[in-house]
Length: 66
Image 1: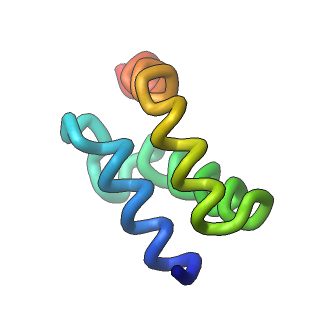
Image 2 (image 1 turned 30 degrees about the vertical axis):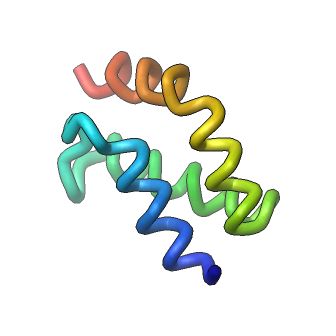
């Protein structure tokens, strides 16, 4: 899997509830964070980490988007 495919999958996982609006500050911040995570862990590693910590990440996203 390449980086762009992993970004798409990660954002789909993180935005299941639809709380991130495309183009918003929060959306861009999460994209940047996911991109860095992919660079550090690789596409598969980053997706696994996101899946494992999704509940915590989701709560943090919700908290910052209000």
